[in-house]
Length: 215
Image (cartoon, rainbow, N blue to C red; front, side, top):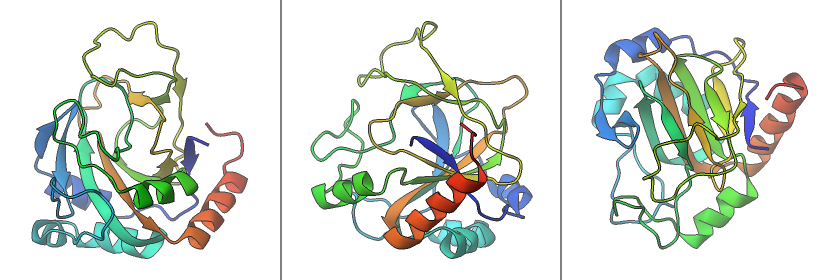
């Protein structure tokens, strides 16, 4: 399973997040604002605290994910705005490789094993934007130099109006987003962390039951 809408309450304060988001720093295909402390010299595994800025700007968002999402703790949380095409890529990190620009965090083998055992383990919330422009595909360029993806076969995902949240397979799952006209305010919350495995599995099972046939 690579994409799963989540059977959780709609987040009621998306407008507040949109108002507070200031654009963030450029990275890859988007601009992002990191909400948790990040040390690029350390591999992903340990709990990371929310930044003072995030706690000040987004208290209701942080309270929601701490309360509703089944995490024991968060490792990396950020807001992402993409207002151009997002070419195929993967979200996972690697035990040794720090990415084509050398600025990715690595990941411990123990935490990678936890992710692989709990896929889809990447939690997302669509704050604003088109609900059917995210797609799955079967290939990507790990150098991120390829520009022409016109011949790629895409399988589009649909995020129901009854939820803002979905889970994505984090490792070995190429995906992208087509830029849609008048969708420049698209904003996505990205989170990984240590999952409460039992609560996560129950949520995924319940969500599969509610959203049968949605891809």
